[in-house]
Amino acid sequence: MKHRATLAFAAVLLLACSLTGNAPSVAPAPVAPLPASPAPESAAPEAAPSALHGLIFSAAGGLWQIGPDGNPLQLAACARGAALSPDGRQMLYTSEDFDIYLLELSDCSTQNLTNSPEQVELNPRWWPGLTGAALIGVNPEYDAGKPALLQIGRPDYQIIDPEVSANDLPAIRPDGQVLAYAFGYEGQAVFITLPSPDRQPLDLAAFGLNPTEFRRLDSPAWSPDGRKLAWVVSTQQGEDYATARIELLILDLEARTALRLRPYVPLGRGGWPPAPVWSPDGRWLALNPWPEDPTSSGLWVVAADGSAEFTLTVPHPANTWLEQLAPPLWSPDSSALAFSLTDGTTSSLWWAETGVWQPQTLPLPAEAQLIDWRR
Image (cartoon, rainbow, N blue to C red; front, top):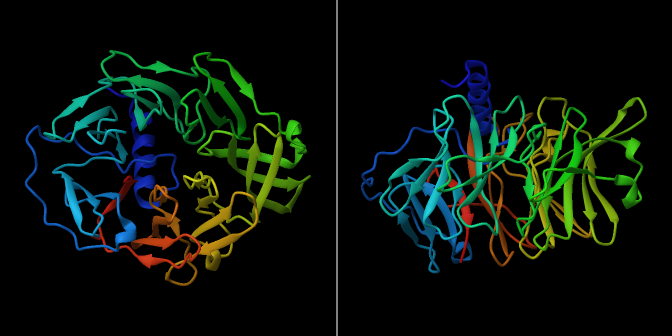
């Protein structure tokens, strides 16, 4: 059976993810395998603005997509997790026994892909450019686990870096050839260019930066064209803790230049802010900060060239902080942004038009989970 200590931590990790979105998991809390027979048809949610065309969400046990006229269309009578395959036919999720399962949306049948009683597997995400493959984390220890390649139809998965575990979810370059992640207490940033297992350290000095100023790098995110890499970083001047800040660092890997954006005084707490999410056109990044000031919490949007910054905050009780429940979603044409926030007690779903940045309530069921945005 799976180790009790590891299982206990994994359960806490997934519970924290389902409540706050700050743990290193994109999927919701693990669920039991589905029965092989399809679930009954669910009642359709209400219509939404046509600007939300293509937004995919789960609700009432099924998978839905907002149509061109704003009316929701049911894609499947079942849904689990948040990892929808590129062809829209399957989903990956973590079960209550911490194995990775495959859900066939056509008939709601399931398949245990890992079936490993002695191991814990979490955080499945489809691997870009590699059909039928996923990135997973193995045996987490207060982190995201060792990155591993899982290929459907093969009996075993391949642990990419057997020596260290990633602090947070590794970022896969859009062409599927390079992984970026950080490990260790100080967040040592590295790359692995597949199929080589050798780690290549990130040299901040090559970007004109002073490496001693950076205390930690983590939560990486590749730009859509794979030429830039964003990190959530902490900085501090010497031993002066009053100068501690968290900020967004964007590295241009071709030009060897760096852009530092939106530094803020962080809230003293455990964990680490989640990775930013790039807009498909590469012009914007959306991120959920952990600022000391609760009035500035919510979702921040920054221009990738540093020319503009916006705070998308929504009504919440005084002296509470807003945290994301799942990574925000951009529309395929980058014209809109959908996101979910919680104040620790209640959660809500919102969207905003690019350039307007005025949050509007998403007309979805309260239990809806944002999955993807495709047209």
